[in-house]
Image (spheres, rainbow, N blue to C red):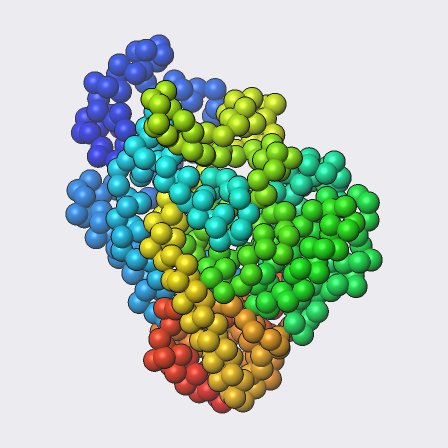
Length: 464
């Protein structure tokens, strides 16, 4: 086939003259020369069974919208998924600010594209520190699981110890990432938890604490929805054993729950997604790590930290990088840990969301969710065959037991789609001890009408 001469609108440098000059610069007759080292036996010589490119923008948009319309989304349906990403309301101004060119196109690393980015990330870190009551917070990392993993290695370097104790009720996917990130130097040991409350087993913690534990990690709220009422005792036990204490948090819960720093935790880690980021195919994530403002903790951050500093102009202040020499940007392979391009843009979104909410907003949000969840649990428990297996208050997430219905979660969720309801996350594989159970999430976006629709749908499905 002869080479097409049109300029493809979605492929950079496809303009023939530009392409020719690039090939001339590397001494190639054609792009085929780049791939000549690939053996012929590994090449596919037939025509690939893919559609012709859609060149016009309108046609491409229609094609993509048609594909997307085949999915069920959280905007056009009632969605009760949680357990990692949650369906919160995102104020329009969050997207307006986040999508400004100076933020959207600004690389996280240095100041050459900075038009307020350093200040925005400093404000974001500062407000997260206010929520956690731990004075130092880094720029965003990839997600909650990555934040735990990085903080575990920070704790190991700080304490010079090599065992990590982790609550057994942690999300399995988070646990896998922590285990993978910590090996081979660090040993990850699970602590038992109470099936009826999802809270950490204090006696098992005491039995497993030893002189080689770097940190004890637990979550509040727990992944399964319980509120960890023994948080201070866990932290105190860790400190008595010479270990640090790390708490995983949903930051939106800190308007009503005690902040980790208030009960002595050394680290708080969590997810930015609830702070102004849409659910997006499991994406839209960004992790954060907060610690005490002490040199032994600050020195082990591998990620960028921003602070307020004096400028060359007397009386003027700016926003600059703190202890830059710690990072892999400065030391490369000798850095504390490797941090590349991460989720700084999501940190900007979180800053706008937190500034809009303010302390009172977070309190009202938390109280509203707590009440809605309690009401939903009580009404679901009235439906024949359904139980709520975990006692106590829950925030956003809670477990619903369908064992008494004689149906699987998969079957129930499939039937819920007929009611335009996306059911809870099936945890029968993650936590088989609960049998056919699902994790439901209720937030501020769920109206009284939404909840009544759920109750009616499950009543009808379970009765059949």
